[in-house]
Image (tube, rainbow, N blue to C red; front, side, top):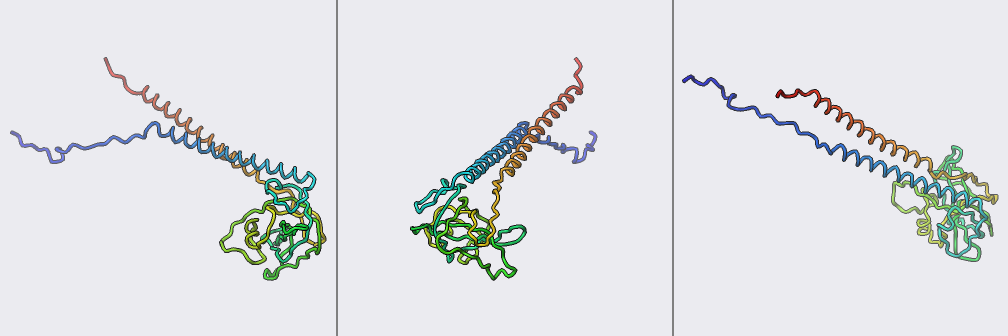
Length: 262
């Protein structure tokens, strides 16, 4: 008997593993998820744009209507928001605050916020009297003339916005980085109405009042919506493109495969 010349390697059959194929349903699921996500985000941006358009229309309507006389009776913010307001009373300058980081024509300054005690009542309303420039030395606050005695303020009722603060410490000085009704009420311990009057009439105080029409950001939300819907369409296009391409490739492969002989 002839000796076997097969080496040890001949006794071990090579092990080959078939490559794991990606499930055929995975691209479809991923495409559907992407389409749903981007379409939802686009619709949300459209809803926000419509909401801002309604606010813009409310502002325009309120600015054109006759002024509402503000009394000491408790008011709801939503019923006064963007309405023309007329309030008579006396300013309380010792409770004034300067809202920082307000720029007018490239010059840094403050918005002067002063409570007005409504006539014959303990009720107050905050008035944004206008803008004053900050001096070169920020440690010296600007002098602001405040009318003495009874005055009538006419303006638009607004809600103050918030800005990012790096510290959560409560503001106690005259210069504030941001203003909310709740914060002012808590710090100053005054009974105030839930809006701020953006003063439009001139009381001879030398403050600048160049409010202009506020930008509600409608165009921004429409722009975001276009981006999301564009991405949604791109995902759908790429899925269809590669799906058709794969189907054609498989068909060509089947057509080119050799046929068996009978």
